[in-house]
Length: 172
Image 1: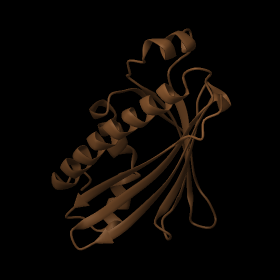
Image 2: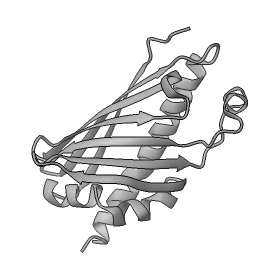
Image 3: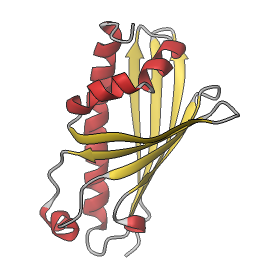
Image 4: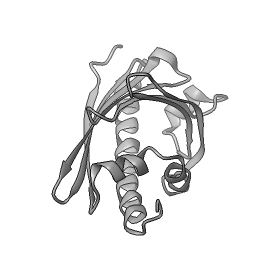
């Protein structure tokens, strides 16, 4: 069974910060290392970080979340590490990032996102448009809902942690 997929939009607001500082914090290693325990990651390892000649930055990261999988999905992935490779192409001038996620399931689970950053008087708004597609016989809806719920939950924690990090001036 092939799913038409699930679309999910996540919006965050980081108050009392301009885009330049937001960008510096949001894409910094110190922020992400501090964030990892707050969003329950077992591992977060930067595989590659390349500044391209056009000013865009390509960042590849391996992420292994602490997660309790639904039993049918857990049985399917038994023996495999629960983790994924996230590749981001960040364009600071356009204030956007395109993200692709590769999982051990290969094309059975496809996740992509477009992120936009918009500066407002109250701070920086982040809008993440996710596309989740599963091709797991009998588990399509469950897999897509699970990924969407986990993603939503973790980004709520990211929003809260990022605001605390900014307010505490941990980047300065």
